[in-house]
Image (tube, rainbow, N blue to C red):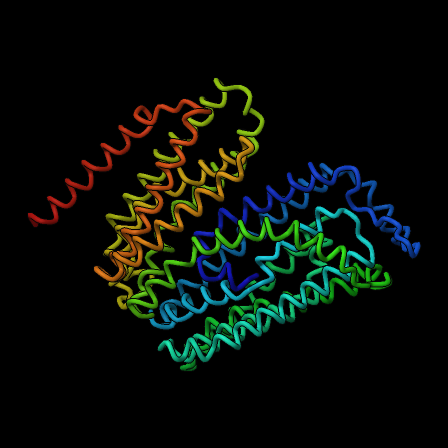
Length: 495
């Protein structure tokens, strides 16, 4: 959903792009025999002739063409959102951003639909008919209602725990909008299953611009506390409006089917989807749990500074992803049985990551005292020391993303879940303790520790399958990094 990407648009940008490519590969491999077909069911339902004719379009062409539109849309959304947020940040306070970040954690926690994996289950089912669409709609709406009930029931507890009243308001509003969106989920799922990303991409690109209009109007008229919520809400509502118009124009044939619910099919969807949903939930927790811990223990203003520093620290990942992240999974998958070429490719990607991310991180480290006040305003100066710590993540994250690509490419996705659970445990334990001792600085150190421990464990698991000489790859760049930072700090101390 648009409001999830809104919180950490930089850290999630690589996930957005990877999702586009992984969706293409997943659909191509799994659904090649029956892609874009409407199978007859017991009632004799079939798609109209024009839909059957669309199956003649080559799947490879559709995958590449649709993937291109999805990627262009992702970069446009990230780029425009980045520039718009720079202007918006100067109008809002760190407390407002902290409250929104904390509310986003609870919205993610209560959102049952994202944990169900129904879109993947629907794609895996392969048959698009009235029964599958009706079952998907019923489950989506029930999940949305359940999410809203959870949010409503949790509101008194959140207020009693001392959270600001604006936080439950944001949570209930966002989940309520998600419930409205659940009614259009089957139509979106059909587009994704058939690799028709262009309509979604065009709608999202246009909505991205329009959604910031109410946010700026509220911020400029003294109602900044509602600005971020209005952007997220208008983004989702405008997307739903665009999708509704598209459904009436291009997917009307789906409405002519006899939609009905099947308990057997619902259980099949849930069995398949919950496995995928579990992985998505763990990944979401890994992204948001630091906000919950820090916002609860140190307050929303401190969280606002930390969240800003975290997002700035992800700028190198934003620049590196187009170079490294797009093809790594498929490269490793193709070379998995050729140890020599696999090792050479892995070392080349690691070397590129180190030699690009380290200079970028250094540039941000040195320029932070001038860059942050210049771009975001003087009120964000407390984020500078946090940024300098989190820039270590800017070096480690591209390496971790490459490890993720390697594990998936080698056919070990279960290791990704295990590593994510390990990282989550490290972050919860270390983050809670260090936040209690040193507030946001402690949480920043805990995030660095989480990435370092995850990489260390991943290396031990990969050693048996792939020999990697990390010394040759990282000793030179890390030595240059250390000497440069020491020299800079010595110069600052003497001046």
